[in-house]
Length: 405
Ligand code: PMP
Image 1: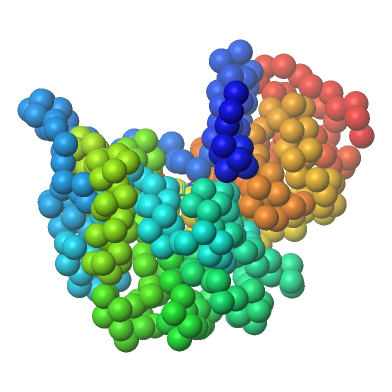
Image 2 (image 1 turned 45 degrees about the vertical axis):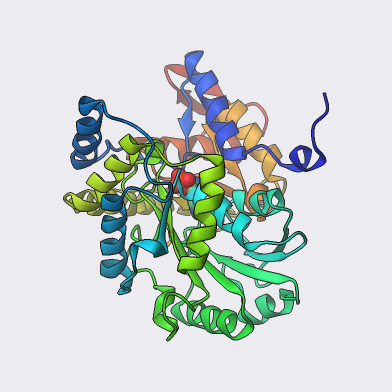
């Protein structure tokens, strides 16, 4: 078969492939615990369900305007005003099939071949692949101090005359860490001084713990929406646990949104009316759903940290938000892909290798699950790795005896 060089160079999504492996094992009746998932176990908000059901019942489901239905865009404009203190126009907003597609269209619109985009490690797995898919070059900056927060100097050193954009994801997938306000401020000012786009992937920005709140990049620019270099990506997947509804959006200058609309018009035409209605319902309905999800995640994060604290040799940075933490497992195995496979085989626990996020030696553990799964999942990992833990464990209703340590 003749496959293009570019297509061949694009890696499989490790998280989606792990979901598939877990599904196959579960179908075989195995008691798999999924600490790999980027989605919570909640039901979609009722307002979202009713609003999409109304469209289905009416049965009049046709193409919509490419950039999104006006009522959803209105809800996004209100969301932007309430959460970012920015008044934007409908022409500053484009709705796509998930924040993933928003980001892809955005990179497509911004990059010339060989343009560079700075990606801060640990990073979301899809950034480098998407940059490559539009013939750009990902330039990864890894914090030298072993933290998950890059220094401004490290970032500046990675910038060249080809740098088109920097992607910032805070709170961060996979580390859960939120960048300090001073770093976000410095990044925005640096980008605007240099004419580099500052892409804020804000998909987790309201899922923040310990009474903290995420920093809006707009706070650090005096420029209006048409001339700022700040571009914000957001969506309903993480905020409302509505991953399957596939709605995300970009807020940016009109000229950029216009180009992105052309790209979308020639590829997907528009996102589904049913799903846009669901997103509108979620955004305009009762917001207690978000707080309930946030509290559940904060509690689960606490349980996970407690469990990990009794694990000899494991180092963890306390996550400020998101669904994840990224403990350092180098005391057991520095090769995260090997370790993740081992844990799936022996302990039937799904984890995501840190290597996929540019942080070898770490594993991403998701606490977007039940407290029971968080506890049992970490207990099983401990059993599989830590010689100080009891040799026998029940996985499902079967007793397993460790014979490899
Ligand atoms: N950005 C980040 C950092 C994410 O973690 C994800 C989902 N895992 C996305 C974007 C994409 O979200 P969506 O489901 O809206 O495509």
